[in-house]
Amino acid sequence: MNLRRFFSRSQSAPAARERLQVLLAHERASAGGSDLVTKLRDEILRVISKHMQIDDDKVTVRMERGPQVSTLAVDVEIPFDAGKKAA
Amino acid sequence: MGKVIVVTSGKGGVGKTTSSAALGAALAQNGEKVVVVDFDVGLRNLDLVMGAERRVVYDLVNVIQGEAKLTQALIRDKRLESLYLLPASQTRDKDNLTSDGVEKVIAALKKSFDWVICDSPAGIERGATLAMRHADVAIVVTNPEVSSVRDSDRIIGLLDSKTVKAENGERMEKHLLLTRYDPVRAERGDMLKVDDVLEILSIPLLGIIPESMDVLRASNLGSPVTLADGRSAPAVAYFDAVRRLRGETLPVAVPGEKRGFFGKFFGRKAA
Image 1 (spheres, rainbow over the protein chains, first blue to last red):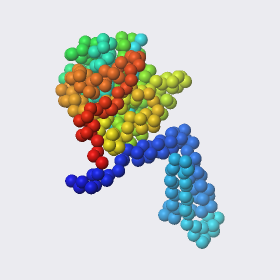
Image 2: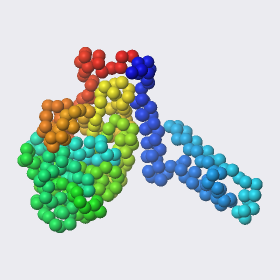
Image 3: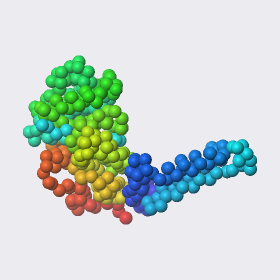
Image 4: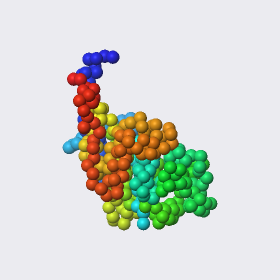
């Protein structure tokens, strides 16, 4: 057995605890259908699709749920003639 | 009127059936009249864990469908005369459980037993929601492990919204039963501690069942662990849990916290 690895291994329970706390805070909020981040994501995508055909490959949505602050990043690649197509 | 308890967890394999059998037996060992009902239609196992697998004639579905009387389907334990089992069906599927049917069976059982223990199937579908529907008290069985804690949190949400009690605006009494707890690993920081789980789920603690060979031994023998070896650590923990269920206030001993010199010496990581 690799002794050094065994001794230097850090504790994993604190990570489990932290991950659970963040996750459950969000899951409890979304159980009532009031998860703001999910709502924003859906509405933003709906607005964009009103003005242009959304190509799934050209849209990236990233969510990062944190204990205090969550971030939502919507990255849409808009082709030059997108407006004309939708019109 | 008897009390209806649901033993539930969301996640499978955390010890619902083992705990239902052990708590049921422990209550009966205290002189109470108990029936343990298996709600896991299609995958019944309570009969096996309680050592009654060769005596099943009728089951819960037969009773609900009117093919057998309740008294015909109840199996009396061979060791404890006040302990009964109502098995689940092995051949039918869970759609045979109707809400009305379950309600009638539970109402009838409440009349003749002090305790009706409903052993819930895993998951959050029909079998699980019907098992919890008529409960007065819920025991949430949780392992100190992330997926089990998450599922327990989900189940607690259902207990507070999808049960008769919740729908009538009453508070569902919920207790946490922490099972498969390994004090050595918790001490080493590689398992969620009791306080971690309690803080996250924030429901009162009914007991801590230590990880133990005795539990597997008991199920191999088809005997609830409180009967197989009443002095083993898990049996003592179940007996204490039952005392709390019956209303006693009893401090919960965290396994490993009273370890002697050798336990401490060998239990800790040597760094």
